[in-house]
Length: 241
Ligand SMILES: [Zn+2]
Image (cartoon, rainbow, N blue to C red; front, side):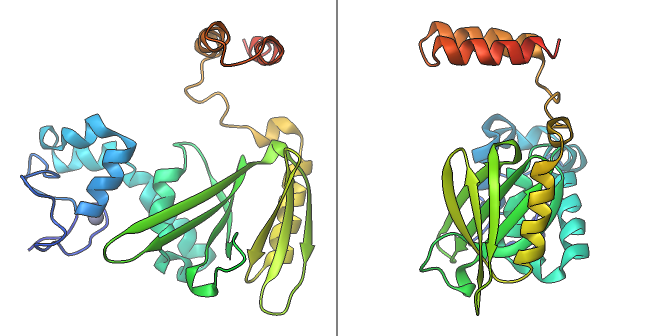
């Protein structure tokens, strides 16, 4: 039996997609779990794997991102690579998003060290990612905090775990952090105090202002956003043309 060409898990009866799914033109295969993730992210692409050679396929998915994430985590702390969150990251990050810091932590009070996830700082947001996977199911939760929406951050040291308190869009969220919380909160504080332009280097990526304006108009016309919201965002977009 061969290995999954994405995650390199050994393929067997239980984790090989049925009916010849997940097979490239060369006959190389991906596992059930990778197939599901890919289907969620990009169904048409996932359904047409057989049209591509293995090389074309890997190029087309987040393969590059996967390698990039793995290398990054490996230099930060190789232990992070063993956590299930490490494998989800490439599917969550946008094409141009860059990971800056990762620490181990979690949101809910009852969670323990065993069920903890990642606190990730990227070039435009902070997010807490928690993946609980068992052989039969996998549950993922994620909470997002855009850097330009965070108004304050504080740090409380505890015995086993410490807390980072984020105020984002008026809501306060406590994030439990196992290690490095003081450094991490200091890093986020510096990050949110940087000029806005430095926080949003990816804004331009596949976001053509003209296209955005059209979409914005659609949103307004269909009553999804208010006139005030429309006007504010419109000014914002016009300034980018
Ligand atoms: Zn796989």
